[in-house]
Image (cartoon, rainbow, N blue to C red; front, top):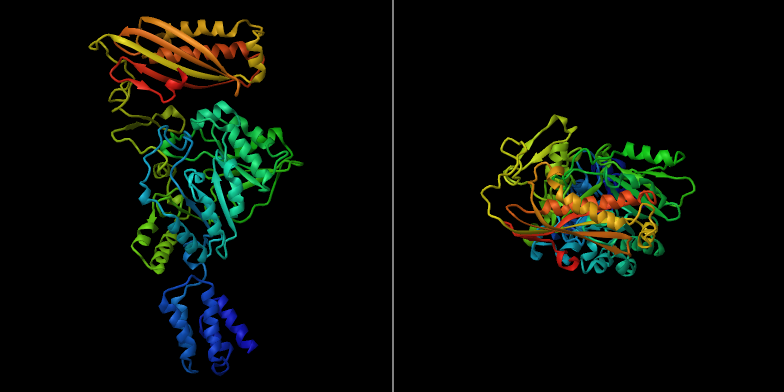
Length: 596
């Protein structure tokens, strides 16, 4: 009996061995009828519950035993039940054990590399996966070998039943980890309920530690809330808390060391992510900072950092500064892809399975579920999608990747655009849309607009800029103790003078006689910023938007010049038009009323 049991268990655990192996190892006469049923049941425990016919087959295998046909019965079981995780293994032998589920398309930020300022058109609610559908799909994948699920978005914390979903998914046998990726704005408020529900791991997206830059990038305030959420997650004993930082040249590549320093006393895993190509985020090679360049910059400050060992499916190359509590790493999606060890699948909020982030091929599980399809049909669709997964980056070139990653969070390509490739642009192309840009002719050359046929009208434009000075500079400025003199008075004169010289500074602007130029300053003591507001008026044939913007830009530069001896960390940001009136079309930014 022990021999038979051992043979049967081996057969059930290693189903790819042909059934005749069992026959060769044990004579037909020594395999009791009941044990054949036990073997089939052991095997069945390792796969998803199949249709009723499968269960009846297992029963018939034990009830209809005869010495001369036992091998045939086992073969029938073999044909109906595929090996554990077979459905999630692709043509390159990669076993997919990690599922990322997007719960919502909504987000409470508007990151410039991710989403247009006014958001995107969201999928209708009835086309999104319901709570029951989400749980059903999660259960289906876990039954096939997925042992890690990450909930993403949009912003997953906007999903109202997230804690309940986590609590239910956490009960699934075989699931080892439930994680979320969040921007951290709401995390502090919800972390207790998520912890009680069984949340295992937290990733927080944060691209800058400078408040004005955060507001510029996300078009929202909230850096302090994100930092508080990180500390709160650490207090709740999440170890490590992963911080994801997309590195962009000219924006935050000067903050690499600051992020590394976060790991000195905190159990953080800061991961620097290479900027990836989306058409909607105006990707180009100038913004891209490679892993090797980032590592070189960090080595200049910390030459003694050492490499940590990475797990087989890790996306991050991990490093550590000796003596620091936490660690940092690099996700090298572009320069050194990790496609060879990829074990990830993605499910969109509207129920589409995506086997590669870079591909545009999607397979709707939602539609099958709502057609009351059998699990077997779903598994066949999933299996076919996984087995067709390409070797790397969906088999695409970088140019095609940019097109396919437009997705639901990026602007779609504009029809009617002509793309002109300039050889001097250093390996990236510049796009001109001749349908919308009045200062570019049909051949892509710059031209000055003829306004001779327009009527004169009263025109007003309001511009804004923000300059981050820091507490020390603000104190000196308020006390009028900056050595170069009265900063704001000089900045006001500079701004007014610049507005009158706009046509000399901006080549295609018309020389407009201005009726009024005014500039005001206010201090935001919470973040140690000065906010500059300009108002420019004229009676003419064209607007004065550029005059208003030039006014605040030059005034901000003047403040920088007068205060730079006190601090080199001054940042000018958020130069934008707040309103324009009197022309063919008026415009008011949503913040205009509250600011002005």
